[in-house]
Image 1 (cartoon, rainbow, N blue to C red):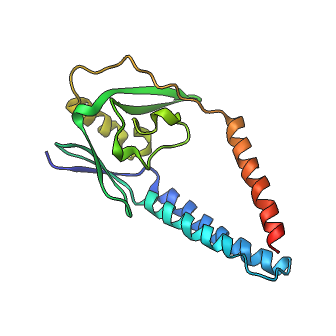
Image 2: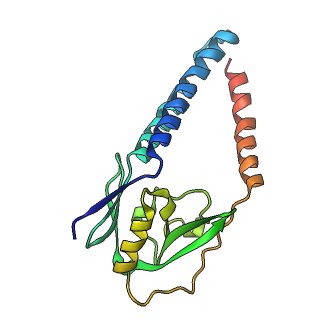
Image 3: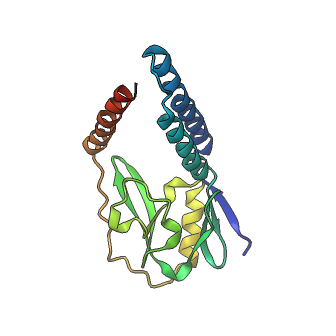
Length: 187
């Protein structure tokens, strides 16, 4: 079987968001320095912008490769990681608001999932769940995985996905409350 390569879903939108965020991370310190007449340039924000850019460009350039050995995730600055077909436990889905999210559940922790855990996956399952909806043409990924996975799959384990809008808003507010005093004290 020839390796089939899938790109991250909505990668053009991710690129736009990444570039816009990087612009904001550079523009905010300059604006604060000019408006508040800061004595020192906020180097902290420039460093944060560079670190954000590193993570975002690595996330933007990720690929999912399916071949005879298994599923491989390749990222720009990270080594390629492979999960074998025998490690797949089941292909399942859950309802996220009114949209079904399909995922591959592995029997054990898999190294390739180290950097792919989104916030809706519970922490104990971060290295055992691969969300299919994160990839272009994920129906084809699901079809190929169903063909290659072991015939006896363990469908008994259901991952308890939890996501609440209120917890997300709390996280945003906490980071805002932490960053505003840093900006004020810096000047």
